[in-house]
Length: 101
Image (tube, rainbow, N blue to C red):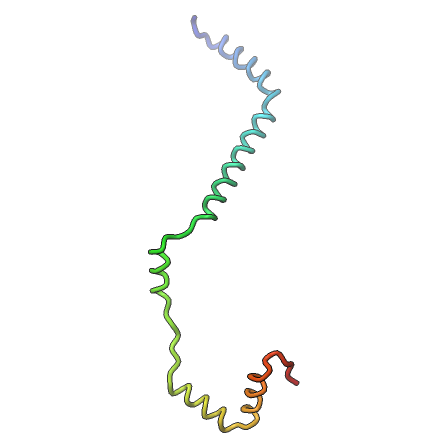
């Protein structure tokens, strides 16, 4: 069998004419496969838990806030000196869900 460009072109044209009928179905199947692949991949990645070593390393990086003892003492002194503020704190501790006026 000799390959001739004329016969090759005519065969490809005939194949293209027959293929136009199924182009939309083929395009739909390709898009459906891509969407299905993405859904499965997203599902796998969303359910994946990090290893315990990574969690421990991140917890070591967290800096705990430190409050200076001098600041705490100043705030407590201010609360003790102001009677009105002291009564507000006491009311709030006794009934935290009450609305303030």
